Amino acid sequence: AQKVTQAQTEISVVEKEDVTLDCVYETRDTTYYLFWYKQPPSGELVFLIRRNSFDEQNEISGRYSWNFQKSTSSFNFTITASQVVDSAVYFCALNNNQGGKLIFGQGTELSVKP
Amino acid sequence: NAGVMQNPRHLVRRRGQEARLRCSPMKGHSHVYWYRQLPEEGLKFMVYLQKENIIDESGMPKERFSAEFPKEGPSILRIQQVVRGDSAAYFCASSGYRATDTQYFGPGTRLTVL
Image 1 (cartoon, rainbow over the protein chains, first blue to last red):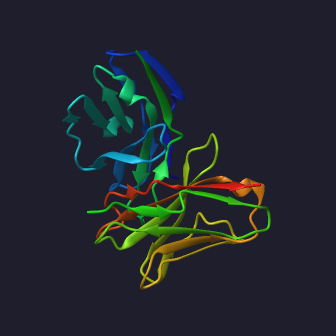
Image 2 (image 1 turned 180 degrees about the horizontal axis):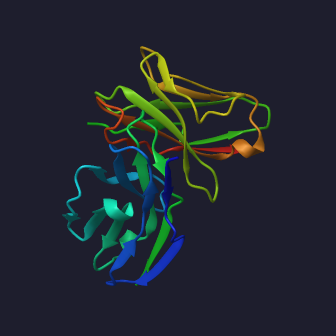
């Protein structure tokens, strides 16, 4: 079965703190794709990153970084020096290469307080 | 390059009425997906379509729901005889050449059933 687990339902931090959002996935496929999306209070879904199962290199984009570890089936997301504008619900998702379906985790609601 | 467009953004229906949700994919995209986000829940896949074909409808409720993506015009998600439990945000996404490509989401349609 394919499954994505985001164990942290809510996280609250103070501005400028670093924060890591956890994502653990389950799949039997050897080829798969992992994604992170951001849903700000306005409600739209914003694409952040796509990673395929053969690329375990960590990625950094400004204050955002992602740590992909196949050994622990995790694809964690870190925001460095968080800002109030980072407040949103963040979703991790899996595409197991058997069609287009994205399997989403339950989401982590991040609140960054000034 | 316009993003994924959905209309209406908000839709109010009374129980028993029909709801029609429209989605125009990004220019050049031929894959369309519909997801539903119920209150306090994550995003759930409903259906995956290409032009004139339903590829995967494993997430569609068996009754009252249908989807199409005609040769010309937007994709339509149709809900007949709506009930209060259909109240949710419905998101459309599109991707390019492959089903495993990044899915870009529209702003969503918030359906309220009175």
